[in-house]
Image (cartoon, rainbow, N blue to C red; front, side):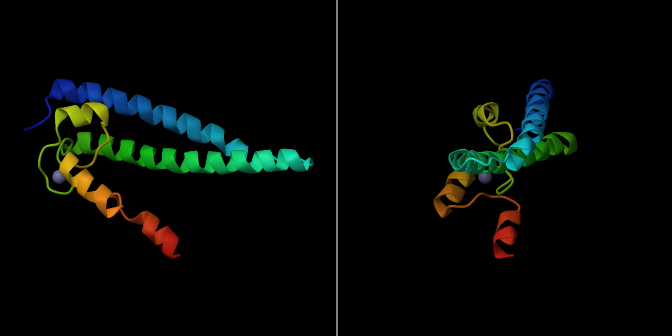
Length: 128
Ligand SMILES: [Zn+2]
């Protein structure tokens, strides 16, 4: 089963909008990391804000990567097929998470293993 071209257009629009939002948010976040204060209480406050911001940036960068990958899959025609088992991802799942790379079965299997079916770049970073 393939995703209908008309639906694909809608999905691409959603993804492109999401991509633009994420790029915008990530750009704005750049400023947070350099905030400084002489006041120690402020410093602590900023530190936790920075922490939170860094975690958000992490999450948003990952999402942005997934959104970009989904747009690439729309472009090359592989959108809608599971990355792992190549079966069709359910339209319901794609409507909820257009950047999903795998079907619900594979996602659940990956969740159980406690890892994302990703490109493995994070493992590399941790190992370094
Ligand atoms: Zn699958």
